[in-house]
Length: 115
Image 1 (tube, rainbow, N blue to C red):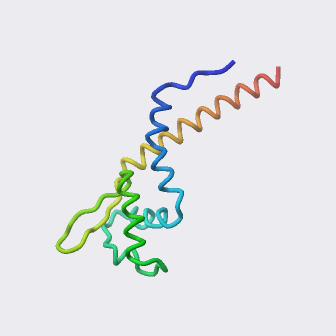
Image 2 (cartoon, one colour):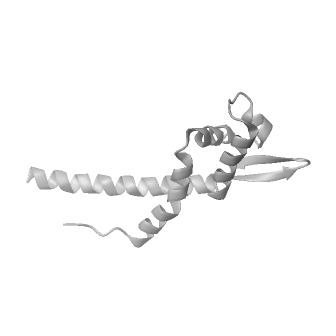
């Protein structure tokens, strides 16, 4: 017996796919971790201690910004980057829905096997 997946869950998963793709890169995940402190960072601060150039860091930041995980704020002559937790929370909720669906499917399977 198959259970229909709610259309809203499918829509949420589709909307979160770009976020998961962006987080699949180690450099972007590292940048996001730094930004999760709640502090705004310049490219100079984000690239400090990294083997990557500022140009490479900028490209990664643009990917994160395009999917809504961060935003840049102009302050004087430089851009400062900050985390946008709402988009991360939406992706987390999508994972929770998927996890619940798997738990339900496994419970059904267990019931079927034990009968």
